[in-house]
Amino acid sequence: MKFGISLSIDSRSKVKSDLIHDLSEKLAIFFENRTYGEDIQDYIIGFTCVFTPEGFKNIFKKKKPTYVSDKTKINRFSGEKIRLFKLFIDNITIEEDEYETFVTSNDLDCLELLKTKILESLSNLDKLPKSVKDFDKDKFKMDMGAFFDS
Image 1 (cartoon, one colour):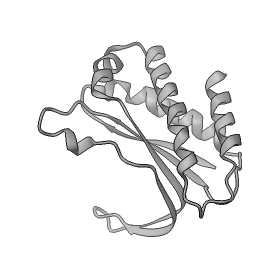
Image 2 (cartoon, rainbow, N blue to C red):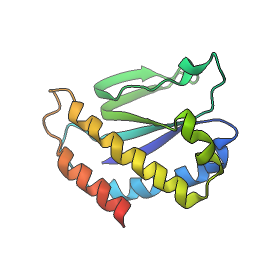
Image 3 (cartoon, rainbow, N blue to C red):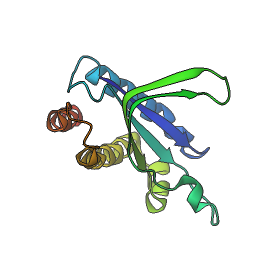
């Protein structure tokens, strides 16, 4: 399974981008040779850490998890065709009341918050569409827990 974390961050939270990239790479390596079924082959977590000023709160509102069976999109900047195939996209957000703590905390505390957010987000797998039949979500959740315990 392919695994990754995509970032939407502002200039203040950019100081944590290396930490998040490192976590993403370690998760990608951990899940690289693991299989949980045919219906989800790529798993992406969209990570948002942006302090939004009053009046702009709806720009970075929480997104619902998305499953894409098979779809081709065109990159609006490059014109390149991108195929999304058996992809699950989940999202985690550093909330307004967590933002300052996340940006100013040490890396260990930030990783603990990320761990908590990712593990909480796994409950979204229980809302997968009925068309997703061949995916062992319980094994995936156990493996994610094992990754963070090690």
